[in-house]
Length: 110
Image (cartoon, rainbow, N blue to C red; front, side, top):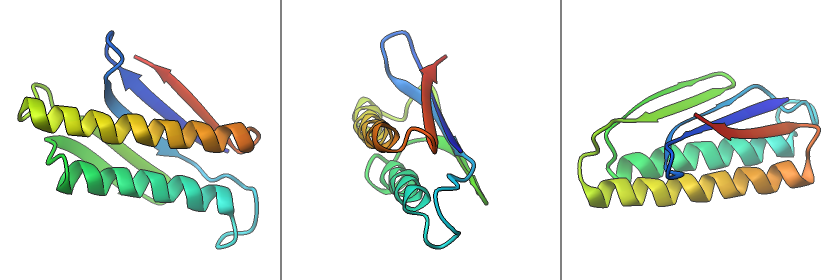
């Protein structure tokens, strides 16, 4: 199962997220759940770096994507763009969970 966790501030802003594990929906290379989740997580990283230009820490490894935004942010504009990217990524991951609940679990908290 893929575990996704988003850490949020009181106001709902995402400050950290990680995606870990493998779905097990199909054989490696044919697993549409893993492919969808991986595409969203990798695209979020690209967007945070190249579009938002967010100050952050990140780590990628087999079966793991982890990101923590630096606080305070570089600028209000960078923070706003990062939030748009992360909130949209979270919506996409929740949508996959809705269709494949036995293979991905998305949690939110602090």
